[in-house]
Amino acid sequence: MNRLHQMSALKAGQGLSLYLKSRGQTEARVRQSGLDWTLYQPSAMFGEGDGLVGRFARLLRQLPVLPLARARARLAPTWVGDVADAIARCVRTPALGRQRCFELYGPDVFSLGEIVHLIRTASGYRTPILALPDGLGRLQAQLAELLPGKPFSLDNFRSLRTDSVGKHDGYAVLGITPQGFVPWLPRLLAGSIRQRRLSAARSLRR
Image (cartoon, one colour):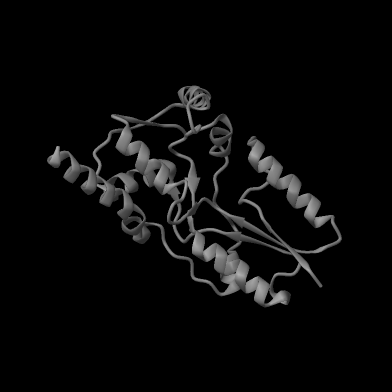
């Protein structure tokens, strides 16, 4: 029998975020579809070219001060390769994940502020990080929505009001030992470090 493998999000259907709300609505449709299904609920994912480490590394490089909304929001970042492994195992062994939902989260829980400080330390930047109260964080999100590329949005702000931390270890069920966030940082930041060195070399030649 064919199966629908649905990528969702940890805490789907919870909180005020439209993104999480839509994920919850999608899950409900999948569960009620009559199809054979498996749901995957990852926390914030990290990997090469991601929107977590890469985004904050760019902001730390570009800004004189990094104002940070919802710095106390809690996340358990998970490596994208572990998420892919979880899906692959369920595809290879159909009985493993039939009519099941897997929460996929990393072994360590950090606040968003801690994550950004770890990125700053690993990248060698000294950019001050300023944690914002929620009123200013909301204003920052509203203004950032108007910028090219929309680096931060009001719905991102709403999402961060719901901690992305799980309770039921889907990796353990699947026999996967998830990789930690910190050991990956040097590799994920290598591109930005290399780019800095190239830029410095070019400036010397001018």
